[in-house]
Length: 144
Figure 1 (cartoon, one colour):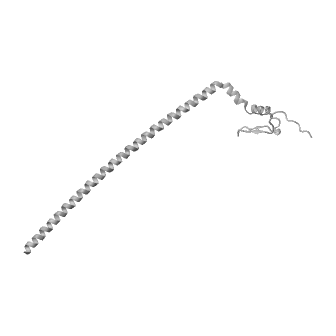
Figure 2 (cartoon, rainbow, N blue to C red):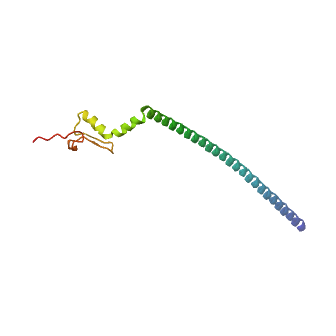
Figure 3 (cartoon, rainbow, N blue to C red):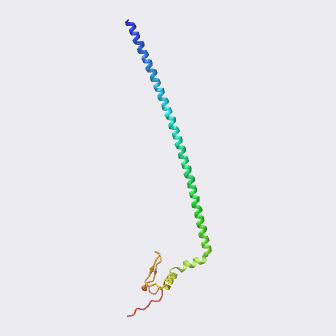
């Protein structure tokens, strides 16, 4: 009976050990499959994100090209407009306007009858004060 009970206990222990070994191996294999599935999901998500980012970059690149071509076209239109204006006025007229400068402005303001008046664009003031020493015209003598 002792041999029988020892044999039964040994058999039971061996069976329990084998069952636990099989269960452990199955758990390891299940974990491997779960890790592999997670890796596949992460790889697919990464590929999808990469494709979306590349599409966004391509879209932005094309949008930038359109903006550049639009700005170039507008600049060309402005340049053509300016050239047409200059051509219609003629370069000689532009030279005369540039050379007339402050003296012409002084004469214009004097003809308007303005006195003690100053206009400036920050670089070339027009001084119409009586103390300007006759820049606009002859100084009027002060009566005593």
